[in-house]
Length: 456
Image 1 (cartoon, rainbow, N blue to C red):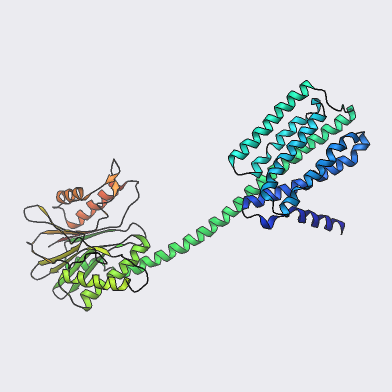
Image 2: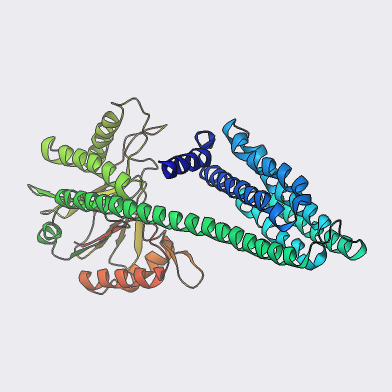
């Protein structure tokens, strides 16, 4: 029963004021102060009781007051004086040791106990200036006490037997303080490692769940993308270079064969990753509806209708969303080879029979909400058989890399396409892919990449 009472008292005093400590550091320093206060008081009691047995009654005038001084911190914490208590507990051992050193001779080595008090600021404070200041005060006190003991005689000369007992107690005190300080840091470190391990497990689990969700979203996105074979069946000499930056992408390609018309597009929705993929679902669905259900044939009219549907979709909520897409949309009449095209920010390139690369400029507005919207322009092109047509997004040209870590840019992309115009479409794709990989090197891919090449 007595042991239970002692344990209860120890726990009660140890957690005094803990409910008022708001941060982990405050809680740890409070527990350390309360525990050390109990140990110091118990040490003082033992020494005060045993002092008369060794003819040391004259030191009670020093130990008894400090016994009460060392017992005060748990009460200060209990009444909420946590900040004051930290400062108080940092200086009270210093005052006690200064008094002991003035009282005793240098042979007892009391001044070296200051080494233990100098470590207290490391535990009690987070502010570096405060730690350096307290450490400096302890260092200064050590040198001043050394000077004092060299110049003046001790107030009391202890008997030889008492000196041995006193020295033994001092050494035991040093070991005890060092033990508790090391134990404090070790338990703090172990607690941190356990907490870090738990956080890592939690993060790993969340990451796995997120990756699984995004991977499933990729399957959904792939389901809305037309099979590459659909393009190859409609236009055998063609290629698609599609390189998402993340698992899912904001870029997508569109292909639809309806009657004598083949619709093909390279689209770049706002953002990349999950946000871009969500916008791409809205835009792809609107594109499908305009072509398959509304049976629009002119690319300009298609983009006008898609813009209307995208804006209507995003304005249903209370948030003002300006997301949309840039797109290069081509409609090819498979019988007459007439090509109609319209674009939102992204142009059309083609190489004519004179081996010149020509560009058709797009409307400088996105498919989506814009400040000054104008209807998209349909460009009708009568291109000769064998003409090479390229639709693309901005991801390839915007990729950083090369020897100087700069953007690839459209000029270099145009030169690359011109140099390899005589290769088969499959070989052109491989050249573009390998060049992109070599240019990027170890630099992260900055955006989704989509390039479609068609030979009429």
